[in-house]
Image (cartoon, rainbow, N blue to C red; front, side, top):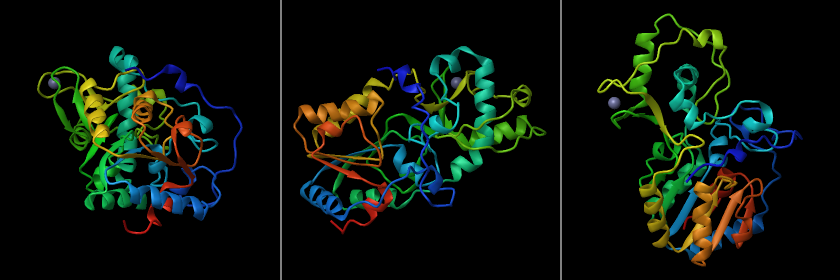
Length: 310
Ligand SMILES: [Zn+2]
């Protein structure tokens, strides 16, 4: 499937004040009034009734760990800047674009890779350990679920902590590439700016021209983050695998995703076809609101961490 280009269109310019917290981690979380207790109790009932829960997580989970999202009103990257994520075709076609991408990614890496899971990630990991959560599908590429030790996990759009060779298909850790970048660019320096959801930061083009990008050590091929860029397709085998896990589940919970991208939304459509109960925890509206029997408006960490043990 193809991630639609129209999703790259920025939202209306209306900018609302972000949530009142002053810490960096909070500043990427959209404004939200306190979640009402009644809806949290209903979510508790929903989760208690499920014995094999299928969970889809998105950027809303990571904003609470200090990683901005693209689409949140007022605080998302689209609302605040004119930066847009890398397009797959451009990355493959243009050595210059790859150089710019990797230079920026190199600068953003120390901050991006140091982000830690929050209490929502931890809550989902506990549900997995207790056998409540059957499968977790994340649209995030920040490895925050795997940092909690989550095992029953599919990273639908890959993970920025892995690097793929487009020539031989070799997968290597992103940390190794950082070492190679440093070795190839001993005198190259750039200030760290704001880090995007995929680890991207802004750097002047002039600086980028001097940045040297290594190729695959096995075959000399082009290196790319093992991430599904916009305009690329999610592997068919992965999609089928997730559909199979959905088929084994008895309820669906969406946490921190507006489901604007079809690659995640398709599983909600499948859940609808199967008449599975669906609940959603998100600050803003989602594409699947009409499919949900329960919608909790609130911050993921706040909502999931106050739920009683199951
Ligand atoms: Zn290779």
